[in-house]
Image (cartoon, rainbow, N blue to C red; front, side):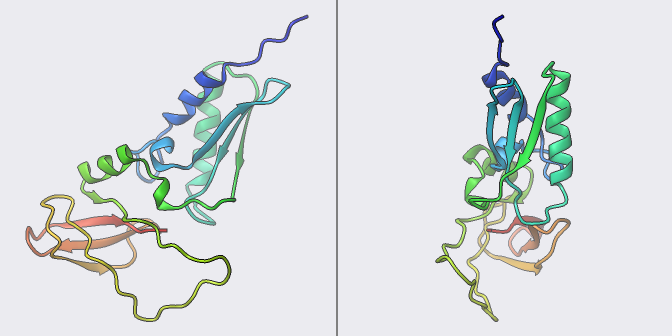
Amino acid sequence: MVTVLPDVRHARHIAECVPDPELPMLTLADLGVLRDVEVDADGTVVVSLTPTYSGCPAMAEMRAEVAARLTAAGYAHVRVRTVLHPPWTTDWITPSGRRTLAEHGIAPPGPAPRRAPGPVPLTLSPTRPAVPCPRCGSADTEETSRFGATSCKALWRCRACREPFEYVKEI
């Protein structure tokens, strides 16, 4: 008897199209949290996701939605696993994802800070570069709150066009 394994490319396409629950204009692929899709020897589709940060409350929804969509597409055996190493950074957001954030009025992150392995140094008075306004492009902006609607966003305001906007923090 010949065992036919599921089509990994089709399974990957389905997983890539799942929207992020907190930033629904982005897919898991755009956000860079979709790490891998493979098929085990027994035919189980295994999807690997990396959370944006430890304890991300959206991970349960991401796992459930990936599994539901693959099951609905006819994949009988699906496992979604969490991969923590290497940790996700905002550098994993695709260029298309960055454009989409800006198109939706959310300033995309700049490059993630580079840190040596080991303890993270404490900085008491951080200086951060200007965040360009996603609406008018002005660099004359100010942070109004380090914490936004989700842990990965901050609230900013443009002094030029006077519009508030969200900013995805670099991680």
